[in-house]
Amino acid sequence: MKIVDIRPTTITVPLEAPLRHSNGEHWGRFVRTIIEVETDEGIIGLGEMGGGGESAELQFLGLKPYLVGHDPFALEELRFKICNPTASLYNNRTQLMAAIEFACLDIIGQKLGLPIYKLLGGKLRDEIPLASYLFFRYPSDDGLHGEVRTVEQLVEHTRQLKETYGFRTHKLKAGVFSPCYELEAYRALAEEFPEDSFRIDPNACWSVEDSIWFGRQIEHIRNDYLEDPTWGLNGMRRVREKVRIPLATNTVVVDFEQLAQNILHPAADVILLDTTFWGGIRACVKAAHVCETFQLGVGVHSSGELGIQLATMLHLGAVLPNLSFDIDAHYHHLRDDIIEGGKFVIQAGRVKVPEGPGLGVTLDRDKLQQYAELYKELGSYPYDRDSRRPGWYPLLPNDRWADHTRTE
Image (tube, rainbow, N blue to C red; front, side, top):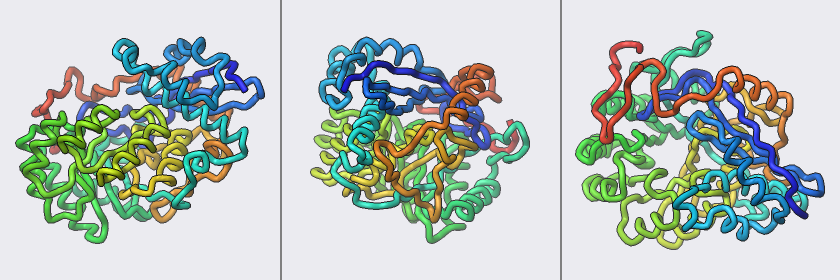
């Protein structure tokens, strides 16, 4: 079997409301590039990639000469064909490789009539628990979803998510307002939902000193971990020496070289594996095995998925013996999806692992066309800018906080 074509399509899918983060904002929608990899047997595998609000169509089309004629089963060869580590100094294609690997695994699974988790050693769990992903947010333009800015609004939003989806773990995306205000908000959540567990992630925008101060203030809370409070392995290492909460990362350990350094000189206790950032599901499984050997915790990170990438995350979560935490997912913020049957169902805070061959999801071509047309209408957006704070951008460490006392 050989690959004969790759077809990328950029789409934008609406969110309930614009989501704020330390670098800027998800502008009320996700921009994703969907790829279809076709073989000479007529099997089509699906992949998905983000891109900070931008299209990756041209990058995928540029790899067509690498793919045409290649056997989709030959994934190790494809890894070096596309992502040779020395060539990647000039053309880092890790995230492109991830989407292509998703599609190839989908093809292999369809060919063999097996779900991807069986190709990876078999599932250890039938359902994957998800954490709620709490964002400070702007109100939606259509008025259907209100802002989340005040502590009271955040607590009520969390209560609604618990009632709707049954979440028992909650992750707060911080780094928008001052650490003092976000500490107040985080404490309020822990007080309101004492049976639940929590994690907070300021996207590495705090100073080492603020990170240590914040970590010490929340030691009494039922924390899963403190995620990326500050930037860099050495910064994280300094924080880790001073706080009694596990530190997690999805920013400073995203490849095997960094993982090796973290094992030799520990800076993070929990490695949050992202099927896109690491270059595919198989790389994440390999990294998880290394973490198992050295007793590091493992979680699954979310980089803003639709149903295709969520399927990769579910298959990954199903096969990891050392998955210690409910996985992250932006998914509940989406208004729609581009897979047949609509969005995955979240019930009692869990999602069932797909059982169909390959990824176990099928493209809804009407939805794909609908959201491709919407992208043509709206275009890209800059992930690292805030639509309501013109001229603003953060420093690192940041001190240019939004004002929590007023709506922007």
